[in-house]
Image (cartoon, rainbow, N blue to C red; front, side, top):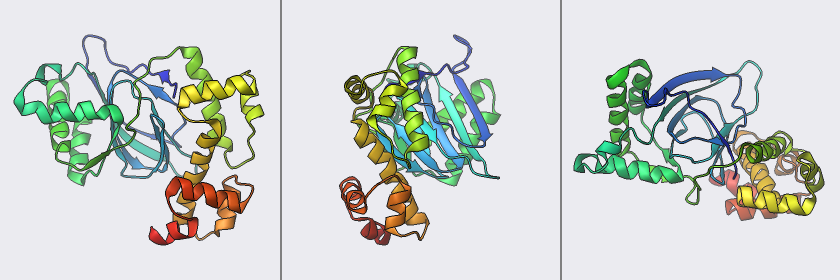
Length: 278
């Protein structure tokens, strides 16, 4: 997917690491990429995470390492009297280059190479505490603490999020257009959405929009929309006692039969079976 280039506030040539903790009303959809690696831990909040062309739900405890130029976003709905919170560490690809060929650092080198696909970890509370220290420390101690965290992560189970993720560099205009479309879909997926209206959103014909979207996202508009709707339906199946028919309707599906077919194709089981299995 085409994403916009985010400028990480590092002092060029003088600073290689930026670590912070933030709290917001919600995670806003901002499809972007940057040269820096990014380690993100979700302290509080839930919603959808998009890495490469892989769309997944996330909740508190989500812990992800992303490689350089991997497009991504975390997105959630604004909830009354609730906030989201995350810890983020972003660091330059050149930070550990000098360690690359050292035998002692071979595991860290492999971890960073695999981060090109996005990595999701099952991290312990201890590792999260160590990650928080990166925010608190300064100068060389900050870098050494990050090295310690990465070393710990080499011993933690993880999975690739988006094996076909592409590193990207795009024009600002292209990035703004795809963000406009994806944000529109994100905010209205529970409603009927036509190809005509999203094409008009960025002043393209339906035919040209289909080509533009497929090239940018790696999947068709209808497949992308269905993926968002099915992921929301899966969340509702597990977190509510609503009927399957009600969930299908609330997620934008016009007929129950079509919802059942798409759900089976995306999740590998029927909605009722999915609820029982999980």
